Length: 134
Image (cartoon, rainbow, N blue to C red; front, side):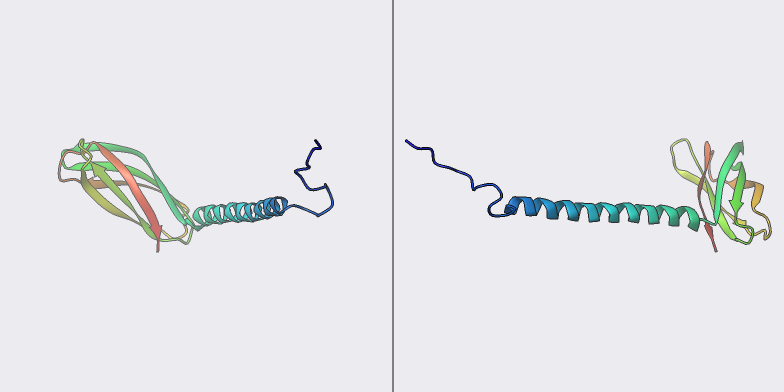
């Protein structure tokens, strides 16, 4: 009995269809990967460079059952104006006070302010919701 050859002779008919498909998949994967990295980089740059006003709460003090004092530090471009929103919450997590703090001092890049947030019930925390430029 003679052995029957199951495969084609190597190098005689060029690349197989599987090898061509693998190469196409690698090229498509590389293009999509580079596109995804570029998109994430663009969104990251836009997020960081696009923020003209940022802030943080340095400390807060619950002064009474209907008031919280918040020390807010704002960093901004010298010519930027806008506002920051601060809110306070009760022990259950319910919002009991909210204040929009205007940030409109031209020529200043850093502003420290102590603001009073009026509350409808006893507050246990204060947090910065966010800032936006006009």
